[in-house]
Structure formats: structure tokens, C-alpha cells
Image (tube, rainbow, N blue to C red; front, side):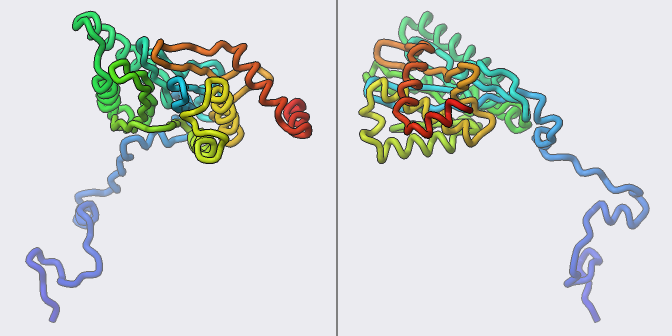
Length: 289
């Protein structure tokens, strides 16, 4: 004779019914209860996924003069190219840069908030905010944005580069969606094309003629262009170098003297010199694309 559990359920039953199944068996529930989608499920819908703009890809690395930060110019919504001249490298103050990957509307608002916060602190305290304070300020903004990120409509994964006047050294950080920050020694990348970018930078740092930290400005700029162009070959959301539209990545450099934006003419010359160094058959292929 089978024993009975305290609740009247046979001991050793193969499967226990769930609560809604019990209600249906007793006539208290005629239709199955619809399952609520988890947070962020709407963003997985291909129709809804294209409603918000995404911006990728960004990179940053230390070279002999400071930190170079670069980003491609393409902004996408789903499978559509929304804009091909987006600014993804933003100046926060005289020695701080923020590069954005994710939703530009959210990222640009974060950048404006940081800029105003740093400026208010400088004017009210008559001194610059410390490097740790700047890094944590961005962490807090990302943490406060976690709700939107979990819904899939406000994800931002930025890079933060700066020159620390107090220690006379360049600093480079990357963040996750929840606001955790990590200081890197050599390079960082974010966005959909970041796997290709990291591979190029890792190879150049380990097996190139000289490591990233010993490259001069010309070599650093050329490497950034190569990395973004390589990412564009493998990732449709990355613009790279648009040879037909004459659109080049945005490149900024932060050093002890401040931030400088490389003119497009400098990027064009660097890219053209790089093309001339390729084998003739590769150069012909590029020119006929």
C-alpha cells in the first residue's frame, strides 16, 4: 500500500503538478495563464530592436605621448545605417575623454552630465576633481541607468581615457553595463566590432616592431585606422574607413597638454601612405572596390 505525503500527495510521484494545473483541474481556471516575457525580451523582437539607434565601435590605447581614442562614425538601427558621421569620442574636460558604444541618446546625456559635474566641482572647490572621483562619477551614471539597460533600450558600454596631472601619467578604463570600472595597462575596445579590434591591437602589441606604449603618434594613428578598418570587414555595424564616402574615424589624443583632435587631412595622408605600402595586387583590389 502506497504511503501518502502530509498534503495528500502520493509519496514518490513522478511529477508534481504546478499551481495553475491544480486550478484548471478544479475548474477555477479555464484558460492557461499567459507567461509574462522577461525584462528586455521586447528588445529581442526584430521589429522592436530597430527602433533605437546603436553606435559602435570604439578603441583606446596608450602610446608614447599619451592615450589615443578612436571611434568609427557609423550609427545603426537594426540592419539600417542611420547615420555615417556620428561622434563617438566626446571631450568631458581638458584632460578627459569618453568614448561611447551603445545607445547614443543615453551616452550623450551621460557625457553632458559628466561635463557639468566636473565643471561645477572645479568652480565650486577651486580645484580639479580627482581621477578616482571622475572614474566613479561615470560608474554611478551607468549604475543609475541599469534599469534601462536591462530593458534593452539604454545599454551603454563606454571607455574613459584621461591624463592624470597629479601623477603625470595617462589613465585608461573600460566599464561594464552595471558600472564596474577596470583600469587597463595597454589598450581597450568596446562595441560590436571590438573582438576584431582587440585581436589587431593584441597582435601589434605582442608581435609588432615595438609595443603600443613605445609607438609614436604617426604609428599609433595608423594602427587605429587599421584596427577599425579590419573590424568593418567582419562587422556590418562598424563603419571603418569609407573609401567612397571619404568618411574617416574620429581620432582624439589626450596628453599632459590637453586634448587634440586629428584633422581629417592627417588621417587621409596616413591612410594613403598605408595603402601605398601594400602589395600591388592588394592595392589594385582596394582601388576597384
